[in-house]
Image 1 (cartoon, one colour):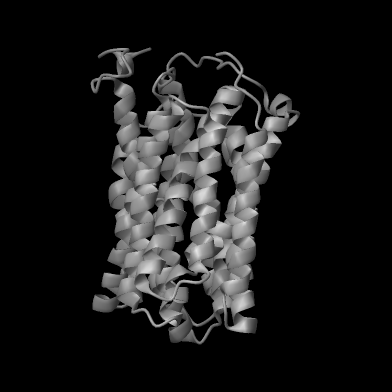
Image 2 (cartoon, rainbow, N blue to C red):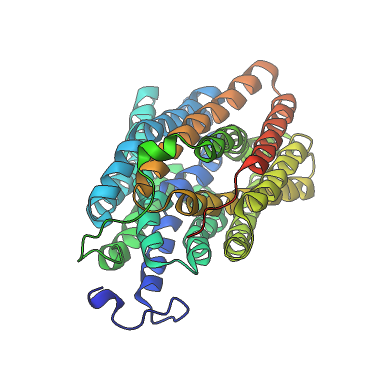
Length: 403
């Protein structure tokens, strides 16, 4: 195992080197594409439309471009993560992502400038999320894999709590340009050093061949496509709701500060959902847990469609966040349980393609419908139904094969 597992092989011990890998991943994910860009997008939406006179649909299209870049490049990223050390992939992408995010402080009135930067963010961004770290985490843990994934994913939960409020405060104090600059610098200051020190596979020195299905074998199994369909349907709805959350609430007379608080409540519930789900996954059947989480998301989206008070907005955001946080734990866990580690990152990358394609559609659909009707209500009702359908699909997943 080399020096990295020399302290102990007990996954329950804090001396186990795998927990250092988990900590590095936790902080990296906290300032990643999936946390920083996704959860602050709605905070910057109105400042950008006000500054440049762009429509919400036009700005939301930038998020869609980033999501489509994630969709196109995730399979290649997954293949690279299966073939090379994760440090060789993750570290350059962290540098590119942080620098590109900071460069939004120099944004001009040319809409294609915005689109170009978001395209770069999408190309590099997914390596900074849990996808870049999950293969390494899965290699270090078996009995406590669910908990390990939960702690990693909790980093995104922490980011989703802290970053919306921090972004709003920075915008109010210094303007949106300085806010972008500081947040981009945060990626490099937090995400880079610990990943450089601790991110590695357990058997990195031995170059072992991990057990499990090949990518082709997995693609022939029903369970993989049920998981993909679930991700696609829920992603359309939840990414649409998250990216328009602050704008929706302020349209209904809620102050920007209180709306940002609702976004942070979403983050807090996201954090809680990840920790609780991780503990449950080590004890109970994952697809049933996913059903409950997706049902929570559907209820939150349905409530958000009607929210007119801050209390309703916070409750809706919390329900969405709890379900989303738990579902983020479920996906890599189920991939490892059903298909093993042999092609884990390749399969994770392909599933991200479908998730990101849907993530590109959701915000654009909500922006388009709002620009046409000046209302989010009906489209959110439809998306709540789509999320409930995705929950029902999880009940069709087969039992685990014996490990």
